[in-house]
Length: 201
Image (cartoon, rainbow, N blue to C red; front, side):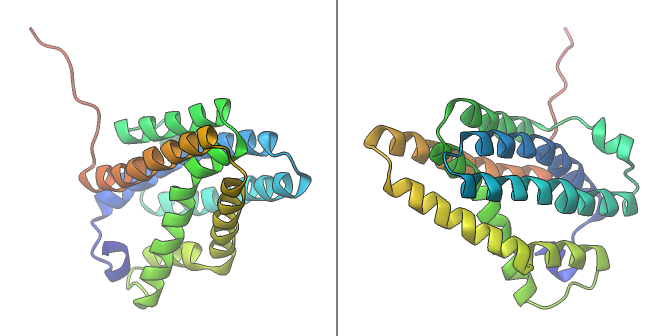
């Protein structure tokens, strides 16, 4: 809502940008593992294209937007993942390293589809009065991102139809964890949740 109406506090947006950058760095590794697990060339091509688009377009948007918020390349690359970012990326990487393509895609779907829904919702409400927020909305409401989200949804559905009971259960668990961690990511960025300081007597 704050992105759409321009009321999102800049400190929360800065925190989100840093955490999302750190998330995307691991997300592209998951996409690479998904492409390696794909049994067919068409799925491999689409996953590699998604990986390339994430590296060249989505992460470029983050770099440019972060620079406007006073975050340089060194700030991004040396940032520390918050607890929710760490948990989410480790869940995805663990699924990608040991799971089937169907399980990996199930784990990826909440992020990919969630951003598509948020982008469409915000775009339908009209342009944001803050230019850098509007650029973010346009990126995720645009046809390129929306088309990729639809493709991943269809891929997940197709793979699901061919699963046995055990694989379906594992894919459902991967999806459920990712769904909860996606919520935790947004909530944690809003609250700027960081690691607790340990020590003392």
